[in-house]
Length: 387
Ligand code: FAD
Image (cartoon, rainbow, N blue to C red; front, side):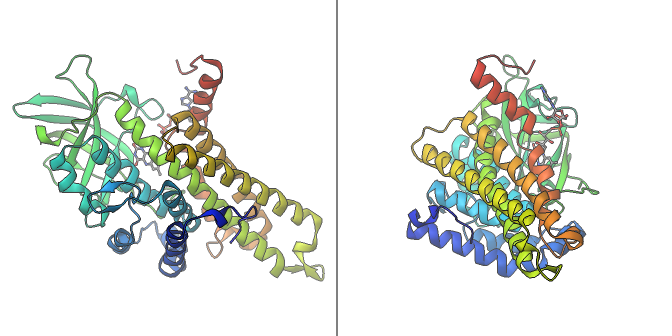
């Protein structure tokens, strides 16, 4: 597999094993049908528990049945999942970084014991409800409210574009707590079978089709006080989860781009035109040279990001740079790979156009490319340009 600078010679045995296990799993169990899932708008839900057994959900957390692998191993896992499909990586990212991470970091002991083992082994599915119909890039303007009611809260509002919501057992819903001063944002564990919860599926997507996306309707939903995440208040809660997920996305994008590169490279050797393989033409070689270089640079960026994370020195702005750069890189290079495959490139028989369509979502969710540009702009000037 493409690793031009031999970065993987430095992996530990455990990291290599995790990489290879994930690669084999997706190649054997998911890749053969992924084109059909994309066309049909389905996710292989029957494999969710098996993916749990394989340790695909937040294996970098400690305790509660999680193996506590290195951040490099976690990144490699995200990369190998997204080399198959961004929808597959999204499922694991949401379950791990956006549902298990906040419970692990901000949850009570009871919440951790109740949810982490079964989310980790795929017995339960979770989703993360932050985005609302009128508030995407600016989630702090959210309208969803939690009003104190006896020993608990009543939630009212709606969330949209929520990965996994139609198949979720539990949603982490971010809402303004009107019972506290200044209505701080709090995280609520909302079981989806509670009265007043609806999770309609969003159909007609042209991107991330092999991922189930939906809404969360909250029509006066009562949750007991013990369902509040006690350890965090304010936008730091959801934003810290997004930093974890974006770290995985920066790695995942390298996988999608690598898969496009491998398909294009093989095609360039196999496809004959004008009496020989198209890979002998300088124009095609230039495309591969650029693609290979950009993938290598993106891999270097996430490798460094991971060192900083292991040392506890990773800042959200570092992650913004990597998410922004690597997803743009993958989006651009998937298009070049598609082009190299000619007419065949527009079918689901080959991966580049599927990746290209998926990457439109990846470019937009978890902070759009524009928003990460503004984060870096603020970092480099000290002047926020959001207002
Ligand atoms: P808007 O915020 O309306 O942005 C529209 C355009 O305006 C964008 O190009 C944006 O970059 C630009 N823009 C906005 N503000 C500025 C500014 N200040 N300066 C310059 N340009 C600006 N959300 C969840 O909470 N949980 C999930 O699981 C989840 N999964 C998703 C799955 C899919 C398939 C998709 C498509 C989205 C998902 N999202 C999820 C939502 C996603 O995070 C939002 O779509 C994203 O934050 C952008 O919000 P928006 O779509 O409302 O766009």
